[in-house]
Image (cartoon, one colour):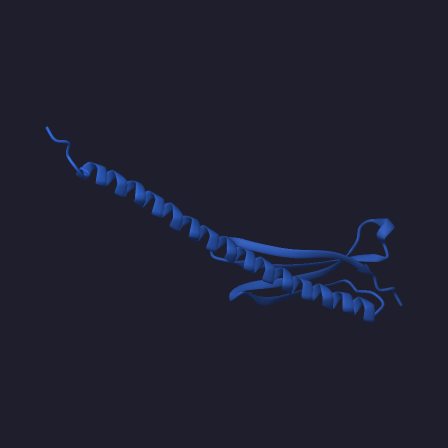
Length: 130
């Protein structure tokens, strides 16, 4: 009796099934990597926008010998996604820091998979009354 050569149909079907699962897993990992990169790019862009606003607030503080309490909100684009940039200068509750104000800036956007946010907080000199 001679030994059969080649692969049986069952062996081929099992190998194709295993190969298919492997290909699906590789494609899924590429998609997840692209999704994570999109989130990272949007977060960096949002942080850049927030940093620009913080720089403007710092410039106002230097030019005017301090900052007044204020709040501001405006629409922005975060890599072609609609978002909102909100900034606020608020009083600090700690008596030891009464000469300072807390400047907060946040960028919020929705990327289709949920709401995202990036923000910065800094302390600057409060404008003296008078």
